Length: 580
Ligand SMILES: Nc1ncnc2c1ncn2[C@@H]1O[C@H](COP(=O)(O)OP(=O)(O)OP(=O)(O)O)[C@@H](O)[C@H]1O
Image 1: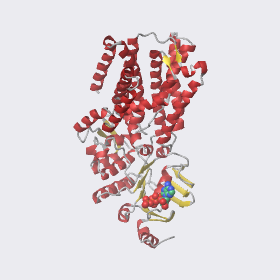
Image 2: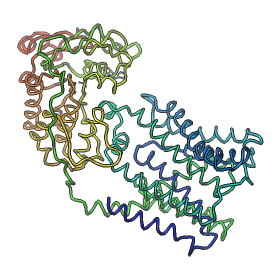
Image 3: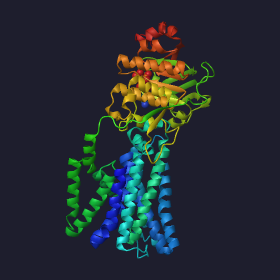
Image 4: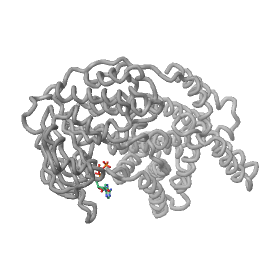
């Protein structure tokens, strides 16, 4: 962090001194380039860090620039009106982005849909500008208004220092615990939802805040250039921002900022010297860079840093949380989970029919059945209130119908998926921290030195040796370690009911035994309830307190281990001879 502040101070000093030794043309062009670089940083936070490919920043920039220019043109440029222009240039894009975000990021919406909407927004804003008559200046834009009383050098310093401030703030944010949530969403949005994080709210808030920053850049631009035009809000400009971000180095903050300044400055130089050829030269440069440096210019620096980085980074200190009040009531009391007459169909195909099941605290219920019996579908019905076609699922007596996964997690359910669902670009500790985000708000300024987890999660880490690799990036872990990490993440949620879909698939005998031990301890000693989907009957027999058999979408047996294992129907189902 010290390096960041030193670099920021040196850059700020260069920006302040710049107008003293740069010529007029360069000062003018760099003022614009640095203003655009602010936009590239916002595109990077959305696309590079969160995975939202957006062409819409141009619309928010245009809205901010036009809000300023319209106030200065139609109302005047007194200090009070200048402040009004500033407030509107930030406020309007924030409101517009909040509305667009609400339309775009509803649960289940695809990334492609979000990108298409981000292409439509600049088109709509541009059309509004065209049809604004004398208010917006239509196709001619607005020009000739009285702007801020600053010299050329003053605007240069305003744009440059604003860029430095935005880059520093962005770097502090993305390195903080809250900033890592963006990377988690980019890596695995489904897992975020199943850790109780409302990714929809995070994305809307991020889009709105960054639209405000973009609108502020629009305020600087409207004042420094003295002219605003419909192209400032168009999707061609929005696409340019994406290209600058890609060439600078997506997901690095500094790369897109430098990329935007360099390419915009180079374009301005070349357009003067080669009026008919410059776009061809820039285009060829883009193609060459995309072929030889697909991760952008910043990849040179990050690649070098990665080579020097040890496999295990800094590990935070593990701290055990006290047990949560109100958890772990007596085993055998009120059912934790009640499923009644549950049904699920895909078109005319009935996948689940008339499922009725209760699970109490302290029970480890294994759900067995042949392939295609409907086990995973039943798990999905318990963790997503929009999946079931009929019947009811209640947790603590509360129906989950219509709820989205993050709301159901808040009711006390944790789900472990069949294929380990973790965050590949985060470290082990950061993954575990994500599981605590729904309990404790993460810091926006720093990454905590310690990691507070429930005792049971710490035990899983110790049993599986993951406590020795808290600083290791998850992509470097083995399959078994990822399975154990996901289990520790789910337990860190402090759920009352854990759903596990084949947690031992692909594990060694030793790893299986460890997971079995952990599950028995969680249920019999800590009073959690668990539902385990498993194909390995020997494993199930060793650890379950009850076994439920699902066959062709129906629950055919629900009994103790001995009852089920010795049942004739089960023997027939598993030998492939039963077609009930
Ligand atoms: N999205 C879908 N559209 C149509 N049919 C589906 C869909 N998802 C699952 N099915 C069907 O539902 C049935 C139950 O599938 P499910 O994955 O729940 O079974 P399972 O018992 O978990 O199987 P396995 O042990 O192989 O994981 C299967 O016949 C499957 O083809």
